[in-house]
Image (cartoon, rainbow, N blue to C red; front, side, top):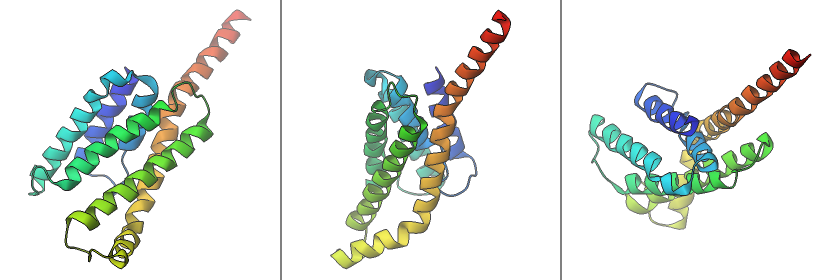
Length: 172
């Protein structure tokens, strides 16, 4: 149930004011992928895709655009990446997987901006400029994904350690 709670938290934080690109979305998807069967991945995909449509509506953007579909693809990739953490209790692996998720999002979302819109020329130089201009956004994405991932994966570990200490104390 914690995996669902984290996805709902991610959706709610997206709908509230928050530091730009500092959300628990990738972390919640990684956690979901690590803890839930893949056949249930439609739930976070539907919730996050729905929140994308709602945010687009609230900001007077087209309800569905190329970025919406690119985000949906990223959500699925993040869940699959989370599956590589299925049995891990290693926060270093969690951190590295979080960095991978941030990097995949950065590369794919900015490639889509370059390919689908006219903001940058459709040349190699235009693609490089697109990535360069996105670096300030990547900083918050990277830090947010990393911090939220360590918190979400660390919370159950901390609770289990606390329960073990409590059981040992009661036994003595």
